[in-house]
Each structure stands twice: as structure tokens, then as C-alpha cells.
Length: 391
Image (cartoon, rainbow, N blue to C red; front, side, top):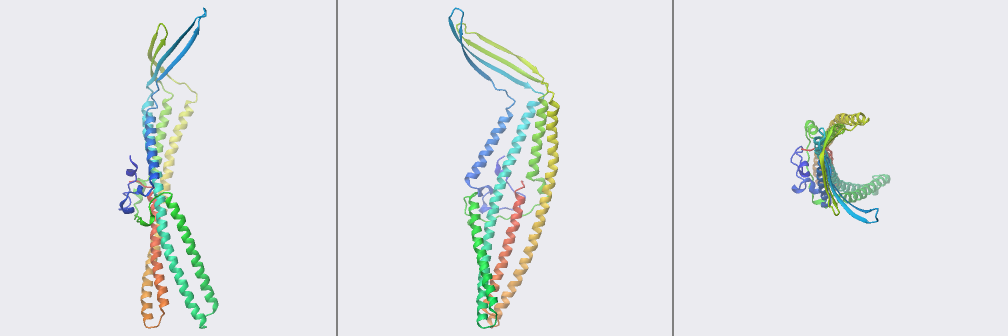
């Protein structure tokens, strides 16, 4: 199964990422090529596993110099072909093929999960970059308001309306906001460099995806981590059966052909069959060990499913919390919109200053950015669910 098929996301409604590009296109060419090469290696390893029960044909050649009693030295060489191939191994051949199929399925899912995790990490950085851009704009507005506050307090101090300590506090507050702005810009540079580790695209031209939540039933039913444990359990099932067959009868067909290169040019051929039954006092311990490993994987599967259910509930709880904050932000926006309108009206008749109106306008923009920042927080939480889900 190709990785782009594994990565389809029907759980999230109408995800249109990066102008319609597929999810994996956010990664750099080298990243995608690395995953493609790993996928090809999985295919080759699987084919090798399926053929492991086939014994190799042995070709040998030897040269001998034989010194006879009459001191005459006779040289001769010999070539041979030896075949010893099992045709019945008490089900071991069938189990080996099923183990190879189960191993391939497990490895493909593991690879798909690794790729999805990398895509998730890359898109998360993209979200964070868009979010930090909003935070920088918000901080610039806060700096602007702090500077307006300084101007207002300076006028009041000059006219003796206010004590100078209030102006001093306003200057300190403005400097703290400017320092926070510098820190945000530094953090943005770090995120940009981190993003470039995974993607060759310009983050500024990429559109943010819109993710939506699925039901708990669908999340558990199509959960990659739960499925990976099931695939691992299947591997261990066939491994335990293969180990059992090691201690059961095996039937081999044997064929040997040899040719001696000397003055007689002798040919010999032998064929037949053999039956072998290995006897090992450790067989019961060996079999029981693999059976226990298989049974443990079933218990581990229940643990993983419980962990994924609890993770889902935790994420839903966080999403509800963010939704509550978004609603509060919307109410603040409504309040500040009303205040801006009222203050402008008062400023037009000289009851308020233009500085008061400007401060409130900036505060309204800050509240709008708070809503945008919270919406990105929500998408980041949903992204964590996406990375664990396949359709």
C-alpha cells in the first residue's frame, strides 16, 4: 500500500492543505525520498522472508594434487551440486509466509506512522509560526499603547495632575513590552530554522489547514497505535507457530551430483529423501516463551486502547476549554467594539481625546488577535489527534 493512501484523512472534514497539495508535499524532497527508499526496503525484506524456508543450492569445486607411491603426481579436480530442500515442515512453510506478510504489514504501518508524525511536527511548526506572527502584531500594538500611555502621563505630570512615579512605572512597563517583542522575534527566527529542517516551502505562502474533530468511536476504530499493536500481535502469533514447527518432523528431498576432472572423467549422482525429528530438552521452554510473548501482546493491546481513549478524552477536554476562552474573547471584542464607537463619539465633541480612542482601537485589535491565537491552539490540539488516526 502506498503511503499517500495510508495518509488519507476522512476523519477530518474537508482538509485542504497548502493550496490543495497533499499532506506529504509539505516535506522536503529529501525527506520524501528517504521514506520512499524505506518503503522499498520493506518490500525487499518481505520478499526475502517469504523465501527463507528455501534452502540454497550448494556449488563446490575442489582441486587435489595426489602424490602416488611411485612418486608420480596426479592432479585432479572435482565439482559438485548439492540440493537438500524441505518439502514438508509440519506447517512451518505456511507459517513462515504468513509471518512475512504480517511483518510487512507491521513495517508499512510503522513507516506510515513515522511519516505522519513528521508531517504533524512540520505542520505544527507552521501553526506556531502563524501564531507567533499574531503574537508579534499583538505585542507591537501593546507597545504602541504603552507609548501612548507614556505621552498621556507625561502631559499630566507636566501639568501637575499626576505624580512622576506613575510616569516612571509607565516607562518601565513600555520597556518590558519592547523586550518581550524582541524575544518573540528571536523565537520566530528559531521556528523558521526549525521549519526549514523539514520543508523547503516558504511558510508565509502556505495556508493553514482547518481540522475538525471526529467521534471517539471512529478515533478508536481507526487508531494507528491500536492497529500497530494488533499487527505486532499477529507477528508474534505466527512466530510462536513457527517455533513450534521447529520441533516437529521435517521431510527433505536430497540430490547430489559430482563430476571428477581426470583421465576417467567420473560422474556420480545421488538422490533420495530424509526425515528428521529434532530432539531438544529446551523445546517446551522455547515454545512457552513465544506463547507468553504473544499473550502479553494481547494484554498490551488493551492497555494501548485504554491510553488512546483517555488521550481522546483529554484532548476533548482541552478543546472545550479553548472554546470557552474563544467565547470570552468574542464577548471582549463586542465590548471593545462598543467602547471604541462610544469613545470616538465623545472625542468628536471634545469629551475624550484622540489618544483614548486610539488606545481602545488598538485594544480591540489585540482582542481580535487573541481569538486568532486561540483558534490556532485549537488546531494544534486537533493535529495531535490526526497524527494517531488513519482512514
